Length: 160
Image 1 (cartoon, rainbow, N blue to C red):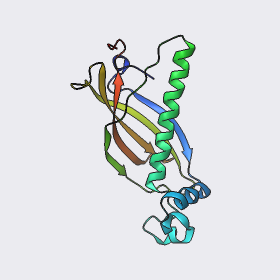
Image 2 (image 1 turned 45 degrees about the vertical axis):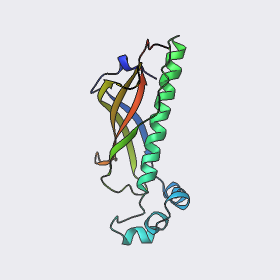
Image 3 (image 1 turned 90 degrees about the vertical axis):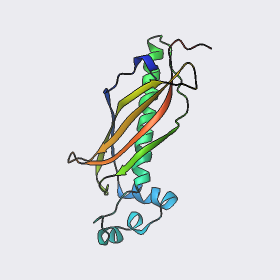
């Protein structure tokens, strides 16, 4: 993972793609969001979604999984180069979560993230605060998901 000084505003990272299958939609919904249009194809077709729809929480969870996988990959690559790896702090939260369009069974969503802003923390010396916008687009290039998240990011040579 990167240190605060290495983060550039506006830089976008592609995180990867995920195809939402009917089986995965139903499995997630059974465990976490058991609404009829997430569990049954016919109920989904008759709903405003027009088909078996993934829970928005499912879409967000896949995005989070891809964010973590990307960070782990970056850390492995940095370690392989013999570089120091940043260990991020907690997230003070997120805002502007939007489920823009339904994600239906068979849709492939491609996720990306971009740094929108960063500043030094007033209350935590040695830390910066970064805000990033993540989004998902379907196979037709239509935005289906977006969120703005904030995280504490260490400075490279932070005092111990």
